[in-house]
Amino acid sequence: MRKAHREHVTKIRDVGFLPEGEIHSRSEGSTPYEMGHDDKKYPFEKIFFAADISSSMRKSDLPKITELLEDSDSAVRYWGALGLLMQEKAGVKNGHSKLIDALNDKSLYVRVIAAEALGKYGSKEDIARAVVTLGKTVDPIKNGCFPSMLAMNAIDHLDDKSKSLIPVIQSMPRTPTEVDKRFQGYVGRLVETTLKELGAPSKNQPKSKKKKDRKKK
Image 1 (cartoon, one colour):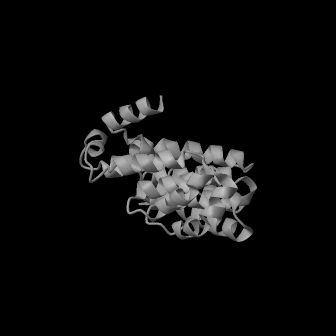
Image 2 (tube, rainbow, N blue to C red):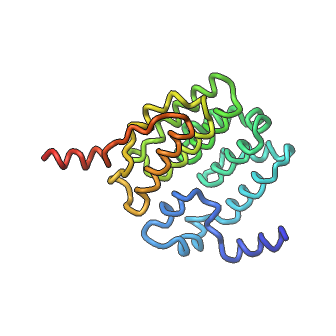
């Protein structure tokens, strides 16, 4: 079954091993299908390897999973952070220093997963660093809707540890006109869900600062 699955995803070069936002960014100017068949834009073999080993849940694989955070490809680093997160305390213990470094990764997706891992299974100092990172990433206007949504999910998963970010989330536009129209509604729904999960009131906001400014003119 495992072999058959590998053969299938390799044949079609499944782009589902990328964070959703990277599917769009890597295929800019073309299509996800074309990007998926371009080894420069989507080095499938090494990304699939990263996803496979990171999902193994074997403690013996933790050193190799940690090494993924040094790769030049952001999707490989993403899977490295995710693999450590999935192995909880053992993963964070084994990859602690690399996860700390990953809070400043060029990829926002890597930063968010590293922050979630440290926030859930790290020390008080780790939690504080994680919350700061998530607070900087959650703004959909500054960082785009996909990193923002991933950050909100992480904030939700940290429960009480992330309650200091409630005012930040409450102030976010529910329909940020600065992001792609196809995805504007996602942000607002996730804002409301996240606030509800954190036990905080909604405090509805205008659609976006940009739109509010236009009305004043």
